[in-house]
Length: 175
Ligand code: 5GP
Image (cartoon, rainbow, N blue to C red):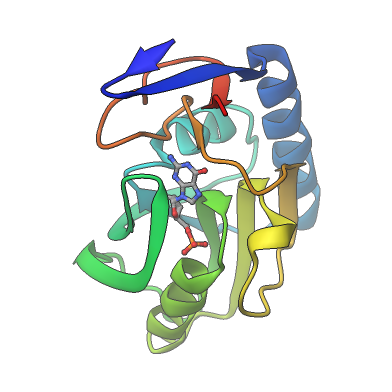
């Protein structure tokens, strides 16, 4: 599969992705029974994960979105820009931050700081993918889908320069 100048090979199939999503949903259903958490979803990448996850939740739940960008091409720029977001009042609420992937950890670290200013009752992070070898700052992931090596991936919401988000499977950069 080709996107712009780069080739990608199949990496994680839809079935494995959906199983990971269901496992996270089941854990959230149990942990937040009787509570009404807010899913704060990090755009653009996490939109598909948020949509599939929400359909598996049987608790009452709100959703809100925040848009940030730290990647340029296939490299993390290390700087996180908050582009827009968070119109939902979070004071006293249980926040679950939904990420597509945690790589260096700068994005979630930055977002946790912004979220803490809104005085929620709790903040937990759910990430579909996690690259433990790329982590630069300590990040505590309560809900972790699939651990992957430090390779660039696309599909299931994740892009390469804006393209490739629509695939049901995940692909990795061909070396
Ligand atoms: P971090 O701030 O943890 O380095 O990176 C988090 C963000 O970088 C993710 O939300 C995602 O947008 C982007 N990112 C990190 N790794 C990858 C990757 O392998 N592929 C794509 N498409 N985006 C990634």
